[in-house]
Image 1: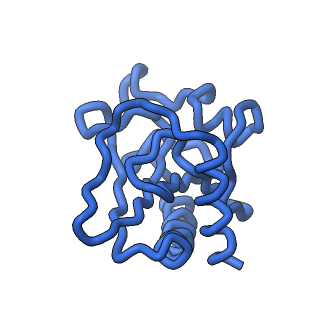
Image 2 (image 1 turned 120 degrees about the vertical axis):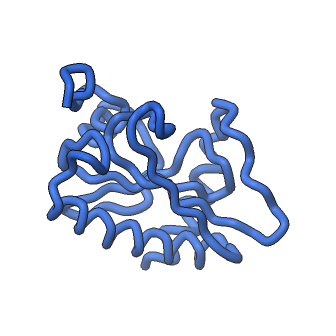
Amino acid sequence: MTADQSYDPNNIFARILRGELPCEKVYEDEATFAFMDIMPRSDGHVLVVPKAPARNMLDIRPEDLSRLMVSVQKVARAVKSGMAADGLTIQQFNESAGGQVVFHIHFHVLPRWDGVPLRPHTGQMEKPEALKAHADRIRAALA
């Protein structure tokens, strides 16, 4: 790993984990954190991240990845149920050439409905009340 590929402790997800930036939390345990994507490609789009610092799939410790995947599955089940989705798309990107934008490993959990395409990633932020409403549905499914 080159110096320009090292973990940046000031990336946006690290700042969210430290409570320096707000988010609409969906789920948390001792190893992972899940929150609403503020620029969702579908209603109910959730991000799941480890609390351990890791840039991406290439450098995360295997034990942290295992715990992360358990949470991805748990959150995915709740997203599908809470959003009454027909299916899910799970995405994870590695390095810029692979589509990664935030360099803290994360999984996108996107609820999908038959015949409804994903919205393009426009950078447009969703209204906080819409994020909260979707999070409420997903949190209820986790309970």
